[in-house]
Image (tube, rainbow, N blue to C red; front, side, top):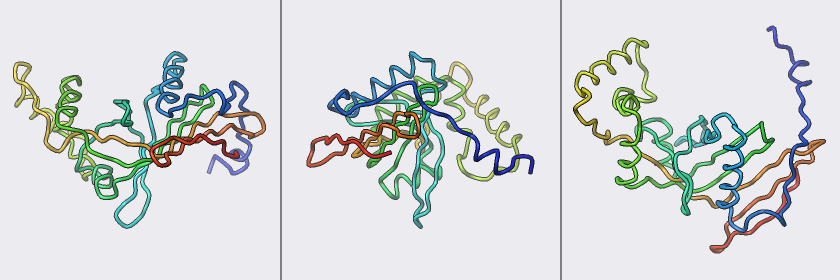
Length: 217
């Protein structure tokens, strides 16, 4: 292989841009998340709403992929998918998920753990009908996570749907498409620091109240 082990071992970055202190953070983790998200957007972080979503299969094997955060409210973090996809089935089976945001431009990471619930039909409809037309057609065209013969098969499915739903015909939301909300019980804010002595501030939900604590790096 062209990439050798020594090259990987020698990849190092020392983080020096910011610091994070438990005395300075918001009392509620979603408020602190909103502060950091606003800073990520202002700093032109590439796709600041991209998050790694971790699930577990029925036989206990972890699975991960990157999805886009599409909603934030007092209840938690929302995203959308095909309910019949691998992640959709795993989320419904286990009822739990973990998500991670990583913003290297700010040397920051946020880790979220929580229970998962489906969004309401109204929430699903509101977001679905706000999407571009091509995205709405794509929700019908893609049998997400299922094997297909080739790219042409997918494109033919999309073409048939375009013929079925011309510009003048509304595209309904597929019954198998919708959102989930992660309702957090643990959220950790990680700020990179020099010499790997990073700042880690964790919020932990205990008896209905958020406990704030510093973790060793």
